[in-house]
Image (cartoon, rainbow over all chains, first blue to last red; front, side, top):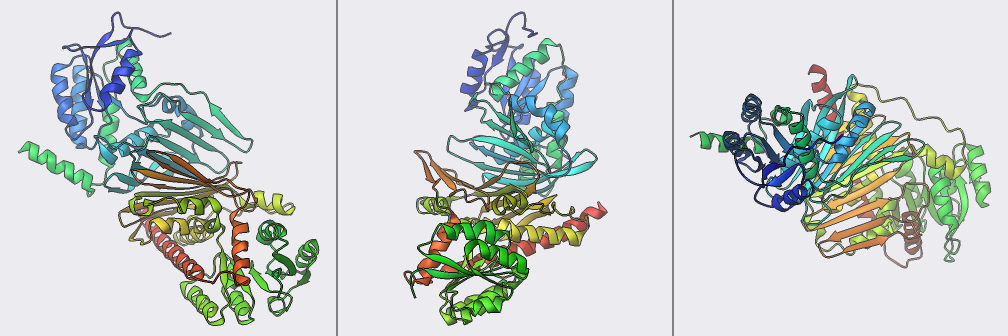
Length: 290
Length: 350
């Protein structure tokens, strides 16, 4: 049964490119949310370079919840500290990923977790708009999707980010072994944005395609065997709306703590220390500290 | 010499039976199969009988046959270079060699030199380079080669036996071999073989977009058969993924992504004579589709052989491009094997 708030939660909309999409999602959840401001409002933070500072500021003024859209690189220790503070304050901080938050990922997670075995390979590709957060944010989104579908990523074994494209190879413990996932992403100015993940096993495969968060087009979740291919039901809901719906359930259940930031901190910790994106952010952070 | 050329085929295995004989059967106004050679005489006799050709167990005998104008080299890889050279020295009208032309760069360059010296044109059976869908996209992609940022080559196919059995009526073929042993040498050999056996089909296309490989960043052998390799050069990332499996679905694709344009090519599996690829070029103003036609890359490559044999077109750059493709593939395969050997060793101590 769907639980609704006694009265809709106020939501302070973000600025920038996501404003329109979040506003549209809010409009479709009128019994749970409505735009507004105030101490009790849910605050949106865009995941640009300064997002941890923005979350920190929001924690000092917001008492209901915070949503971070597609966060880019940040110091893992900073993110962990934010997670601890949010837990202490009982303010859920939820992450709104373009890929990992798509309802098709959530719906497919149980089947994927049960099926994927170490033999074979995982293949992830994303084409993104590149506005705001860039390839590191897309990589973190891909890692979050793999976390939901397969399990916690253990290591990033290879990573290259070149302007607005990236490739990575990661290892994920599964079923008593370790499976490799290969990740690829590139910026596009075209409308064909979205992500795909495949598990290519020895006798079966799983495929999941999701469109960009700006559209509520359905994802496609398929199970391929020797007998044929089964398309699982998915829904016409984009990632922004699915995140809001998750937040609504979270709030109505009275749960304060949300693990999104802790999981993100774990992924940030995996980024190789020598990687330019990491050192650039470290320099930025150091400069801020000075 | 008439314009219908007698073809002699060296090696009568699945590639000959499933690919070349059906293709040649579609071109009776250009080719007639006159001789089939295989070291297994019953196989040679059986296959030759299907097409009304004579059979032999000797490559030298076939190459020396005056009824053979064009030699098709479909033998095991290690014999390719020497048999192509022998056909050139025999003064044949043309040679079609199944990929790879040779197993080493030195052998490939020597074959190219022999072809030039003898004037005998040599075509390598890299069918996708002749594919009408690919060629249509290539003629229309504008500045994609300059603007591309990411190339994604993915060849995910059922085991070859599925298609070979269907296409040749050879029944009860043995199941796929044992999994690759988990040691550094076995894994490195496996990744090299898989790159030269499977990735090699798409590597000429990858080379169009990423001609100068500066770095092989990652390589591993994928169970039960396959490879994962990432390469970089000129600010372009390319990911090569290949995997053979036991479920039904084939997926053979090549993507080239620029910010303002993208190319997506879907190739049919080998063996099945399922027409050309479908190549889709997308820009901000339009989506254009190429291929999807009845003629496939095999037919196009044999048409090229006919044009060369008949002297309608000169050999041109065909062979050198093929040699350069091979050099490209061998270098990637060797670097991938080296990486796997090193990475595996590091894994053991982690």
